[in-house]
Length: 255
Ligand code: ARG
Image 1 (cartoon, protein in one colour):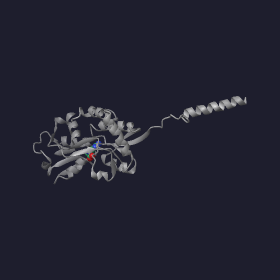
Image 2 (cartoon, rainbow, N blue to C red; image 1 turned 180 degrees about the horizontal axis):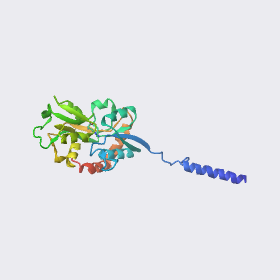
Image 3 (cartoon, rainbow, N blue to C red; image 1 turned 60 degrees about the horizontal axis):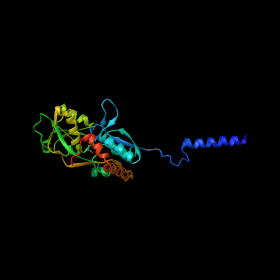
Image 4 (cartoon, rainbow, N blue to C red; image 1 turned 90 degrees about the vertical axis):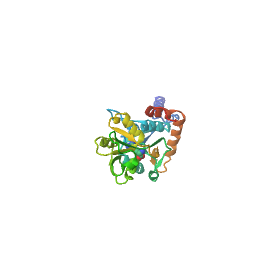
């Protein structure tokens, strides 16, 4: 009787150990979740799948792959572009991925990963506008931009221009279509995507892409997460995964 009891207790202990994973030795630690924030009116980098709330785009695919490579799971949420850096600073977000240009100004507040994409600003006008051909021609004109972006800063640097800053990037393009403004200043790959997906019925790009801007992932200032993300990004660049994601959204890489 006593022997049986000992046996039962031993068996139960063993089962409990198996269930909880204690003493297993090889049990993998639960994947750590990273809170990733983005502003999703920026196709093809981050936007909502048609008819769904799900986010998609180059940034979304890339950050998921980078987090996975670094041993994390990315949990992505949406917010205003101008809310991303404050959320990183307060610790409400671990990473901001949002086609965010690495700037000296922002570097005072957050730490950036290595660059993962080279971009630059461009001017978009209505097709029937033959007056605006460069940034110089925007003087005294009405310009739509997205709030908190490098496009907004560029717009504000134009003499006598009336700049309207929208929370949502799609609304800026809409304002142009409705002739509420004379031009939009936006990141070139986003403007190009807009034209290619129907925008070219009413809008066109003018002038050259302005100075190069590099996108980076933003993390809390001096966080060691930046190093982990860089290492993972580097691996994905070497093993072809980065190229695969790039090709999905932009086609064959221009060399
Ligand atoms: N590259 C520009 C910047 O960093 C615009 C980014 C806007 N991104 C977005 N997801 N809306 O200011």
